[in-house]
Amino acid sequence: MGQERAGGTGHDPDSAPAWTRAADTGSGGGRRGAAGAELAPDAEGEVLVKVTDLVKHFPIRGGLLGISNLGAVRAVDGVSFDVRRGETLGLVGESGCGKTTLGKVLLRLLPPSSGEVHIKGRPIFQMGRDDMKTIREDMQVVFQDPYASLNPRMTVGEIVGEGPLVHGLKDKSKREELVRELLGKVGLNQTHIHRYPHEFSGGQRQRIGIARALALNPDFIVCDEPVSALDVSIQSQVLNLLDDLQKELGLTYLFIAHNLAVVEHISDRVGVMYLGKIVELADVDTLYGDARHPYTVALLSAVPEPDPRRRRKRLVLRGDVPSPVNPPSGCRFHTRCWLREQLGNPENCVTDEPRLRTINPGQQAACHWSEKITAEGVQSAAERQPPVALAEATPG
Image (cartoon, rainbow, N blue to C red; front, side, top):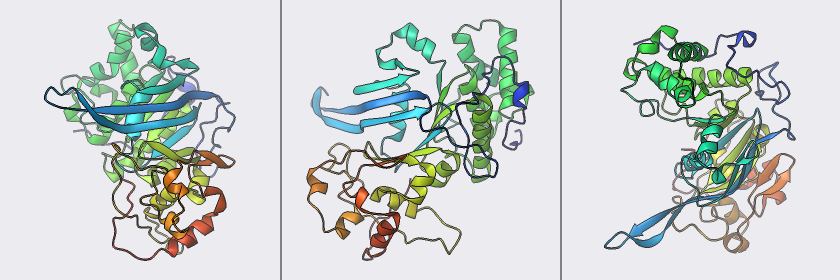
């Protein structure tokens, strides 16, 4: 088994092969944090992906013949957002909130119940087979489990080269040349082209999955928890690789994860999902420094803080996440909301569903009380919460 190599492509963008797209220097795609890092994409940048009122319900069948309709699992329930060219939009939330389902429906790997998705201005749910095949070159996916997402009966060359073969690259020698360049780009030895997935480590398998996603030269990649199945020592290498590839090729990511620290590191903007809905959407610095939804605040309080001077009180949420088959009326978070208790259990939290509204420039939240509280006010209210032995909020 080969040894996992350090993250980073190790390639000069000026020497990128002819099949690659030159990075669009006007589209942003920068990262935050390190000195000299590029800025995040401009708020008025080109919209590459537009999601409008997206709904995905899974019907529950029953009865003697299994044809009776007993309800539906409301996995994604009216989600709208844009992804701008060159940016990384992070998507976080507890397990079962609908993140992965949203990503699959967005790529039309699952059929929607209703709603619209436009990619490069084209409505993909209205496309026929031929048009859909063409636009799939522009959108790809990196799956969560590198063990399950690679066919164990296919060599690396066959796995990475399958997409180009389906899309018309019939010349075997050219296809092999392309695969070798892709393997080098993701930090793998080009001589491993004839090996099988079981001969690689977990991190190397995920690199193969990334190479496969790059094979058709896409604009947009859905990264569905791409590092959650990897050792912590390997996660940073894969994240750095994704970051380097974005800067070199001008890629746009929807980065789905449950690890808030990972999302903060790689994202330009972050959306927070709860029970099939986005409850907060903001620039990464704004969300992590001035969250305006009680659920977001609870998730952030669960992130370990190594600096004892910056540690916040851990928030504790009441009970379990309600069933997506029968979500609560009004605000879906009201059954667990610590802020609602501090405000005297206002009735509109139960009767009126809050809409995702602009609170500050670059920040939206779906809470009736978002505009009435500051970051300090939220935290001080949380710290007055009486201690109770209840289920803790986990960003899992």
